[in-house]
Length: 77
Image 1: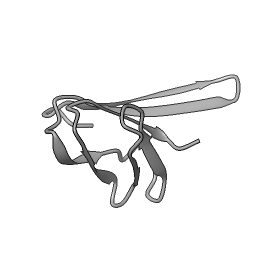
Image 2: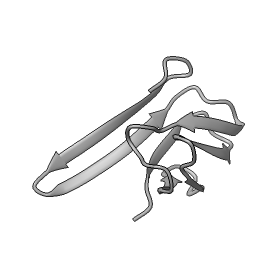
Image 3: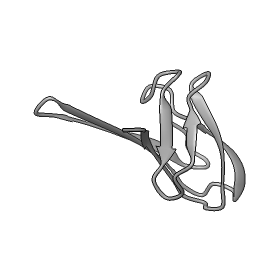
Image 4: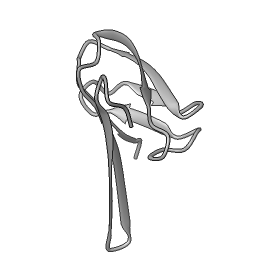
């Protein structure tokens, strides 16, 4: 999704189950904007697995504030 800082997505579809994640590496501490288009649709509510921070996809991306440089986003269950 993005080369620098590195952002990539993974999708698993097996046995009727679909699992999607976006991983963002080398992010700044604090506020960040991460592209998620092609993995998640606008309006989807995502959660960062490391901090529990929730955000909503708008315009193909998300904005969130976390202390970590690593973000793992998945759709809220």
